[in-house]
Length: 511
Picture (tube, rainbow, N blue to C red):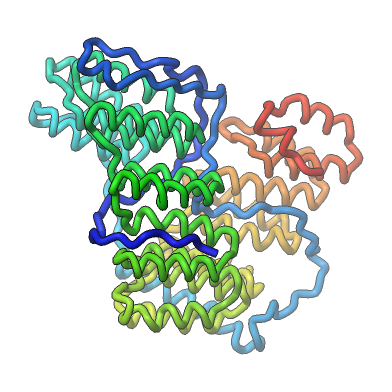
């Protein structure tokens, strides 16, 4: 059960949402020691950051990947209703989906990206920082560096906000070694870090490196220099601990360290703990934690309830979801498009297509219009109803429908054809993406490779692995190794093991 936290009298203190985890790799060595130019700044101490040669984040993430695993449906297998009811009911899914496409075209809008090489009209650090932030949000660290260098070349002194933007861009792309370099440069330039700077470094150490010893050391040094940890600092550390599965230690930070520091938690402190509990399927503990939040005067928000709804959907407890949504007005929170997308996705995966469309109607009556994510969920629903050729037809008519399809939409339909052994259609859809200028991702290649291996066309699958620009992952290697074994090519398996990099290939392969 959830441990009881002491009652807090202070109200909610809002903080920014944690940045999305970007899966990337770091090479090289991080700064082993931070050196300071004078006695005042030297009080910050020496942080040791030993960074392994290659690091990938291991946090909670939302992506479209579904491990292909061992799919056994053959093209000759009889296609059943798949739990979607009578055939007459299933035939209507195509027209319903088409109607949603038209609504998205009507209400949708595309954002305009900032052009690479964009300059600053007014020579002031704040103007540079504004543009740096935009590129940082887009994950383009190169442009952030370019603007930072341009600012210094213009004889402008970067302030602490500019340094924070650059350091945060490096941290969120998992380049922690470079972040420490910039932090050292910041100190040597007599720019004193603020609490946001320290919080960013805590995020780098806990979220990406998993170096909680170093994160705790930063917290100690913050107090020594008169810049004590705040609720954001502790919330960031708790998020890192929960992502590493260390829920008990996260509770220790909440129940002991924050109480000792007289720091009241807010909704962002509790939410990662809730996410960690829900990831283990512990619904009762999750409900207890939400009750504890309410007792502490920290009302759960929409994100909090979305996490709980997602956990309930995975348990197929749709009555529980209805209860939560029914109490939303009383509890003072408002469901958003993400809430309904989670609910609709859960219903579709449970084979409740008609109910999913009824929920969609409720969503739209609440003035929440379908998003591209909603559309992809419904497209997957169409494929699960084994209306694959209708789904394929919709993709081919995308320009006519003014529907801006993405690689995720293609992956959904291709995966459906892969399940029934339709490798020629998978291959055609793959070539269509290239003709339309839609860039395939790793999952796209994995679906095609899996489809080819199922059909015994392992030679072409091997060629795809060798394709320029394609970075194979563990799913790719598992799929190809299984395909090679199926055709009896054991010598090629040995060669494949030889070429796999240590840590990201062979030691994770399951045959």
